[in-house]
Image (cartoon, rainbow, N blue to C red):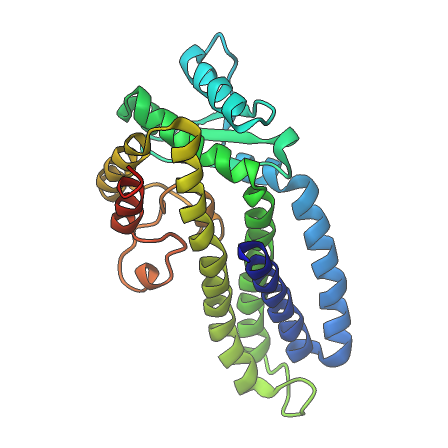
Length: 278
């Protein structure tokens, strides 16, 4: 049921992209948007992991450089019955982590230097298991495709504003008119964020449960999430809105309107669900 819901939501995200194309350029604009959406999905499938790792300047680390991290990744991957993911480190004091890769054979676990310094062994193992659960259930591909399409929608919305201000769109039914373009340029990014939120939230709960099952220790991840909630508010991380849902906790400030559109469930609820597993 969860997978069906995700497919529907990804379809809605793609449909929104096509609708914007139609609003800007009519039928021909929709055809161009359809072709572009196909290219985006292919790009996301093959290159999204490389793109997001480059965005956050994550670097691969060898077993010699980080033996304890590699040991934990190896241990959890055996429990998950998937190939050992590659390990990348982000030089950032804000504690956080994410997973990427189009399938378990190409999985990557990326950790900030901040999370390595702030967590004890059981907490770090819980975080790694959470990310490994995403890889195991191929959430990483789904989230990367969602991020790529949402990013394109936000870019199109920005361009629509300029198009409207320069007099594009006219008043005909095909183009949607200047007011239609301006309204859509505001509503489209909000809709994209809402769809991303719906995709991500259900999968975060599933990954939390998966992590507890892989480690046999729900408290490890529960206490890690509490610590992450404390530090993330005090040590901000420079992250993009389009990729925020990839992280174990939101790297955004969570203030004002952004709190309404958070792609992550409330930490208190996640911690409560984990502790209810005892």
